[in-house]
Length: 92
Image 1 (cartoon, rainbow, N blue to C red):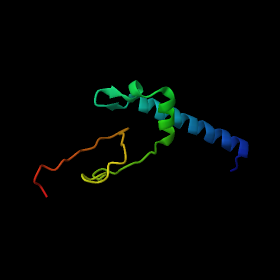
Image 2 (cartoon, rainbow, N blue to C red):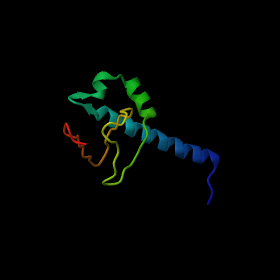
Image 3 (cartoon, rainbow, N blue to C red):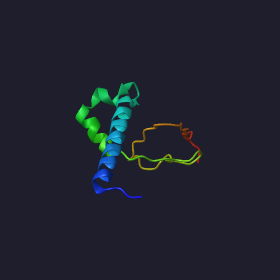
């Protein structure tokens, strides 16, 4: 099997473009409370955000973040579901 450099670049470019379009489409549907990102960000800002996102996958039952850890990542759930547990006041 072989593929020319030109063909390889064309295929990877098309893949990157489709992945970017999918991210932008997803981001336009993201809601924070009752507000869509598209309502507060411009098309250009949505595109920039799409370029900055990383895809991450987690196994069922895997802990993604723990209460008390720095909140420096904004998670957006594309598929599946998560459970959120908040300790009651006074629990250790």
